Amino acid sequence: MVFYLSGLQNIEYSVYEAAKIDGASPLQTFFKITVPLLKPTILLTAIMSTNGTLQLFDESYNLTKGGPSNATITMSHYIYNVSFKYVPNFGYAAAMSFLIFILVAILAFIQMKVGDKRD
Image (cartoon, rainbow, N blue to C red; front, side, top):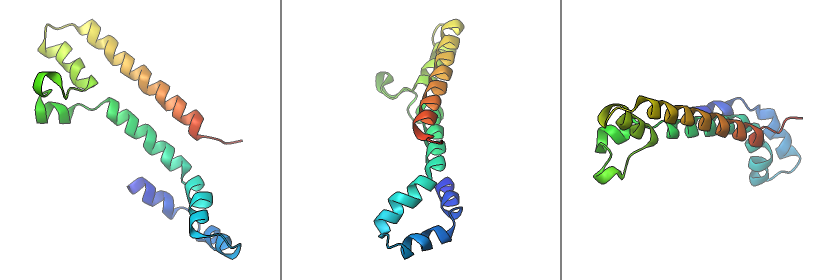
């Protein structure tokens, strides 16, 4: 929310005044001015949310320890279990960690390509 608030505060009020003078409705102003000017902020928060979701560990470990028969386990929690809880298999855990790294990089690249339409 802080990112969106700072993005909204960086939009000049004169842009909204010009839209109002031109006869734009509030809905048109939102979709034609606010959303395009907030696109970098939306892109940043999407990448950070995806990254945070893929690396989620603390909540599943502290709240449920994986839940009933691993129902609430996350990828990071599974890597932890493979590394330290079950028979240690550090090579497999390192490969899974590297896979998460590649997955985050690919998703960030796709989100940058889709969201960034600069000429």
